[in-house]
Amino acid sequence: MTPGRLIYLMGPSGSGKDSVLQAASAPLAARNCRIVRRVITRSAEARGEEAHSVSVEEFSRLEASGAFAMSWRANGLHYGIPREIDAWLAAGHDVLVNGSRKYLGEARRRYPQLIAVLLKVSPDVLRQRLIKRGRESLVEIEERLARNAHFADGLPGPLVELDNSVSLDITVDHLLQLIDPPGAQAS
View 1 (tube, rainbow, N blue to C red):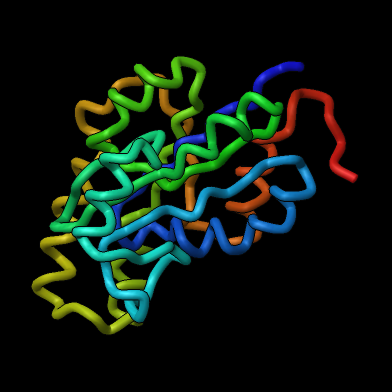
View 2: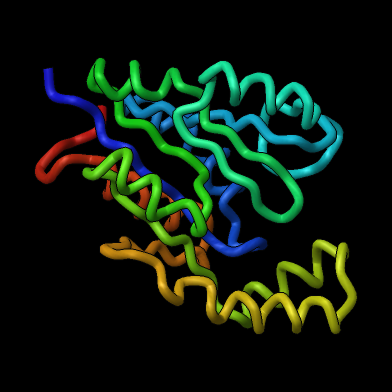
């Protein structure tokens, strides 16, 4: 059996990773691709991706017991990718994870064949999305845009860029084209 591929999705905050993952979940499942539900140390009531929320203590216990294939810390939170991805990959399933740019080098070491996907969005589109979201002041939005301009600096390649400045349907179609082997037709 051919092992599955690890698709490692990254992108700056506000790029639309959660929206893309949600919109792509059914067509990815039809293509034998599993989307991983991350374990995160934040409140279950927090908005954003559909993750399994745990306390820092529970996360540490899980990590020490070997429950994670990958784990990292970023933005004051702990993130874990459940070990079950290794069984899924071995069984021939493609696996899509919402990864961290800072962990990409280590992820490549563990999974040398991983496909690194960088979700990008133009600054003008991102600015409008962040204004509409209403969580940050205009000054904070401009600071975020300045940080995002350097998001990909120093990332170990190769990277596949996926532009989410267009409609969500187009972005999902492009993601599915990446998942589909050349010449394959989805049913």
